Amino acid sequence: MALAKTRELYSFLGMVLDQSVEDWIINNTRGSSDLSSRHKFTTVRDSAANAENWRLKLSFDMVVYTQTVCQPVLDILGYKKVFHPKELRNFSHSLVEDRMFLPFF
Image 1: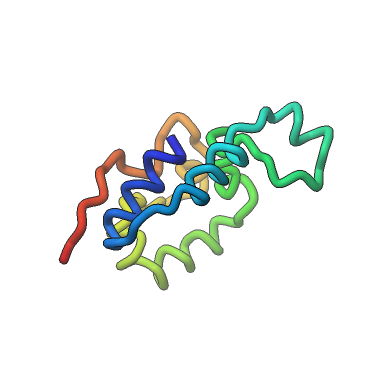
Image 2 (image 1 turned 90 degrees about the vertical axis):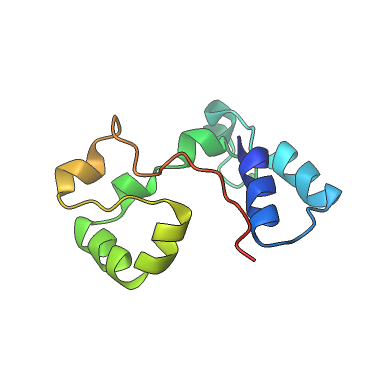
């Protein structure tokens, strides 16, 4: 998933994705959460398991502030706004639209 989304973003930006970047993504985003918990200083992470940790770590006020200042970018990236702390912490509700990034130039 991380590699596919990276390819979409590079295409969206009109950039060529270098093989070394693909290799890095493959080698560093498929770690097990068990490995990460034993080796705190490793660069390998299970990116799918960690993608929404910010929803637990950021305060609702910080999320509202970020939504306000970064709204144009968040709209382009497909992030949905939250209006209540319970909505922020409800992991059964995704805050990211499933969308394909298409070049705009």
